[in-house]
Image 1 (cartoon, rainbow, N blue to C red):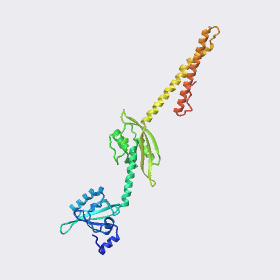
Image 2: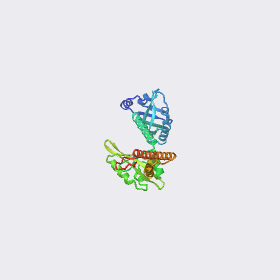
Image 3: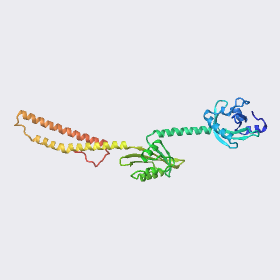
Image 4: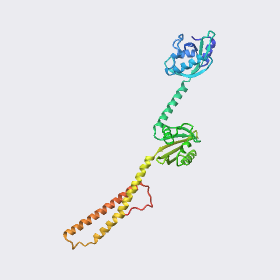
Length: 339
């Protein structure tokens, strides 16, 4: 099978390429020693080259082979995984072309070289990219990477879903992000551009904004802008957007509840306790010396109950004041509720 003349030996010695010639039935009729020593167990056998290929590459290679046979002179390029004598696979990049012999038989010539290491690197990069995309797609936060000219370079699954649900638009790479932030009723593009430009100057920016989509649909969002550098050169801005509507609604409910507690404490302190203080004052002036034993006992019970009620009101006011201090920022000018 191998050509052993000096020219062939010289070619085999000088390069690491593979040279293979096949007939129209995919059978190898010639190969250089570099190919034969690495991929053929029997130098005198004439296998079909498809017997050496990975099953995953078989159909695409046969399609390319058929193209060469049907269009002699047309050069077809591709990559394939081929098994060597040690049952290990090599990734090769090849070019293939067919010619017609004088007897009208077809020869298909293939020239190839290894791309084992680059192909592995590409696979590792692709795997890392898929893992990273899966992580971004699994979060409920919207994530973008935007160029300095507002062009979307990357977005995750949540960003795409929000584009469809809130804007009626299917986001794609190359879109202008301003086409989305301007599609609301409260003109948030001014704040977005301001925050974006601050980030382009190297700042990390965090802002919270209420976005009004319709009268019935209003959402609060927290946006975090991070500058992205490559070798000290700013390449764009990473934006993470979180829906904080539920959190803000919860905090607003707590604020309203605290306000109600404060009003209750005020009522207790001023509208209830004041009349009670008057009652206690009157009771202290009543002379019980001339009263019967039963009346003296009733007065004693009345006086004790009024004092107990006064203690209860004091405790309510104190509790309300403590809740206010725990849930609201400290205000040195605020006046405490009178006890």
